[in-house]
Image (spheres, rainbow, N blue to C red):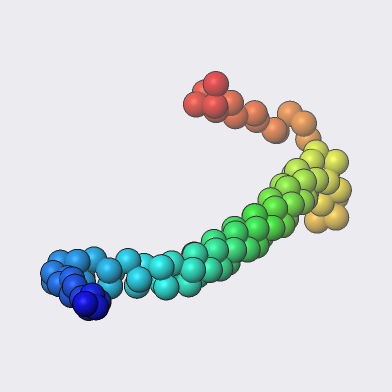
Amino acid sequence: MKKKNVKKIIKISKFEKLLYAFTIALIVISPFAIVFSQATLSKINFEVEKAKKQISTQLKKNESLSMKVNELASLDNIKEVAVEQGLSYNNDNIKSIIDNNEE
């Protein structure tokens, strides 16, 4: 007598089908998500470096302008402008104002 090969059919529940489908989708989607997140991170880092460069440039401009203000406000420059305008420099007429809030 020959033995017949009997194949058992295993029934898969709806939950298991859903679980398998979710796992397969996760395996397929995850490489794309990783590449997308790395590209986004790279773009953000580029923008941060660009902003740092702009800040550095602006700080240099601010420092240069501050030096220019100090140069124009110097006593020698004030005397020179006064003479050019036909005014005389009299140290007795200059009053010093002390700001007590800066202490």
